[in-house]
Length: 477
Image 1: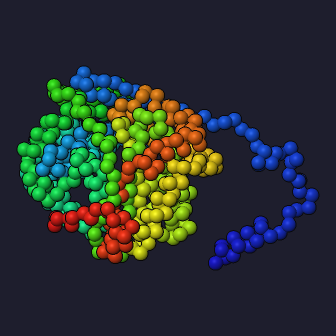
Image 2: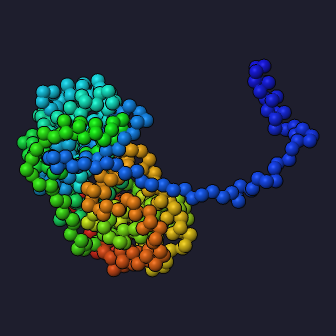
Image 3: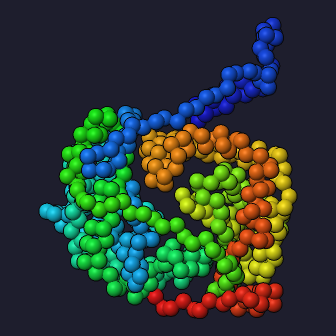
């Protein structure tokens, strides 16, 4: 108690008693804070080393000696886009059972024990147009960690019991999808947008049940080989060590197979409005259209356009008008997925059932305004600063730096893409934005809109959009 009283007494004298008489006034030579001048900050993207191994694997390396850790990651040119018809879910199951199903001479359970004993983190996953594998391990355990990692990637065992477990988990995931309206709506939007394209295909109960161990083995043989692989190493090791370790553990990986080519989607979008009936008090609206690819000049204006439209959070037009001004949504915004050969710009609104029609009308009005009226100068300036800052922070660690370089090469982007990105964003004008918006957001640009909602919403929308297609009920998973 005495100690607390003394502290309080000291604070009283410090903040409430006047300064001693005769104290020296502030120096008049010190400039006001708002008049301080300093040289402009400069920032250069660190550049990792790049090396092509004898078997064709591309290796990137960037040191980071802050901690005695090493991170190794692989990007493999495959994904669910290569799932055979009737075997949807194969890429995902292949990646999952590669990790859990062991590699000679270790069973899956023994492999887990060894990885755990090293305090390592080892993952394998498959996305739509790429697959990834990663290892994080202490420097002192690097050799053993890489030995296990390389075995899993090159010679997986695909144990039957681990495949059975992975299939059961996938079936349960499909069953639970019905209980998540947001995930369900986005999946059905993707399915309608990419009708007739593998990007619109998803696993079903029958497709998962039909997948066998032989399917996993054939998929691995077809796509997991050096021509499809890029490796990134970062952490507490030198470039020469990275090359030696990559050669030791991955140099014997051989194949005559060529690199897989990921086909672009057909861009002849017919458009349309679709409704998925679900007895829920909320509605989910997802709408999208094709947009510029990363290789097009309009990619940079569209990055800014997406930020201004809806991905910029509280400052974006969609958030401001739909949520803040009219209170129509508890979540809303936009997204822009730019790929090497195509782009997808989408918007979404999660709203209560009785607000569905109004929210959809406001959303369309916002896009209409963007396609016909120039953005405000302050909007463009704010978007440029935000994207510039976000870009810089995407290089906050050695792992993220190398990941950016690997992604750029994987996508076949120009060699100066990363270094010129900020300048190209800064060079975008209001006219560039209006040109991009008029081309891709105007009424002449076809779009796909998926609405998930209840029967009352369906009847209300039918009066306004009589041509809207009602999707068949989902089969029991």
